[in-house]
Length: 296
Image 1: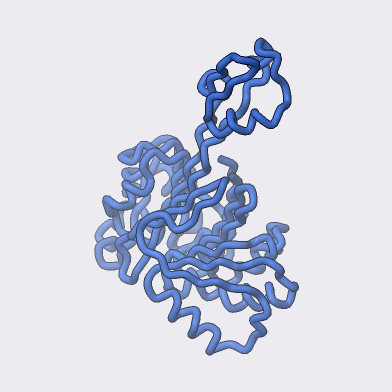
Image 2: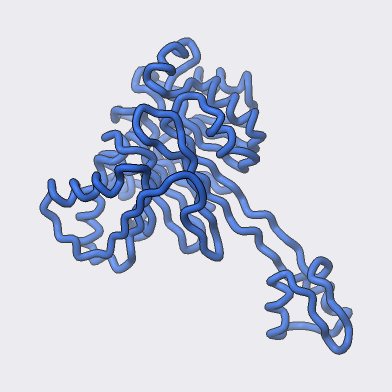
């Protein structure tokens, strides 16, 4: 799974940062989470064709997370987009998207499917599973979990003792089924190796909440908002955002392997102190910058 940060600022764009947008790529699934103003330009700078996108996941409908959607759809239409754009979001998404089509003149000569979702699994194919978790913000807001399917690989060296090489029957082994070959039983547990799929969790916008810990549980990577340093913790209750320390506490309690912080207030010119503060609670943490790329 490849991850590209296209926007890491909270609320407002700065000279260094665009508001929230993150692009995930896993096999045939090219997923954009949130689409702030200027996201199209970020795609161009990152040399990622807009037409790669086939899913848009919306965390919530605050402007700094969705203002880029009308321009995105118009550009896809202009570029003869041939896929189905699947849009998922929290309660209100259908009405908001209906309003977008009312407010702007653009040719919708592309296939767009919009679905409101709640908690739980909302998409699954042979490669990944997508789940949503309710967060605690001042409007309906969802955190997202992207989970790769486990991969079962055949151990061809093990099969040599049975005189078995390439054969259609290997498809059953790949599905985890035992097979009979020339009168001998071949156990899938011995003839295959399972590689556990990676789990990535995306948490923003929210105050500190137990549901964020639940969503992030045992993630290989947690991407979490870190709007302020801990000295501004009193702001978190009213504005329903988190500090760097709170994000680190979620990572620690959720037993994640790695934490990437994002969604920084414009008051911070750099994030060195934010990262330093988080490291006191959870060591394996970095602050994302626009155009940073990570592989999981």
